[in-house]
View 1 (tube, rainbow, N blue to C red):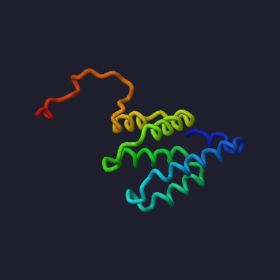
View 2: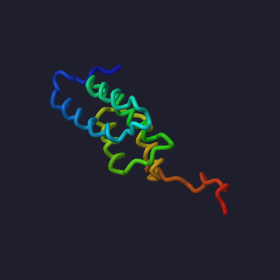
View 3: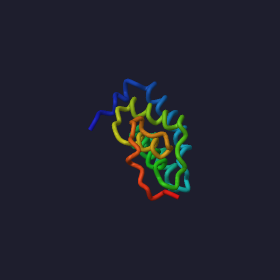
Length: 116
């Protein structure tokens, strides 16, 4: 496990992260899980940024959740970079939003079942 990223020495970073995640909290619908606001507040209070980010990503990747706006995906990608998180969240969000993942694909991935 990683250290708490020098939380005692970087109070300014903690305040900034708290503000960023407070804004991200509004992205997650309480209809998805009524306990989410309380859990999210606790994660922020305890500086559990990675877990809070995963809550946002999990919600946005739910099939019933509309695709995320490009600006939100960019914000999430930036947070992943700053926090050193390497997972498929951003790629999956881009794919869901129809933005692809930046990799060129051949048309061979298209199956013929949608033909009219």
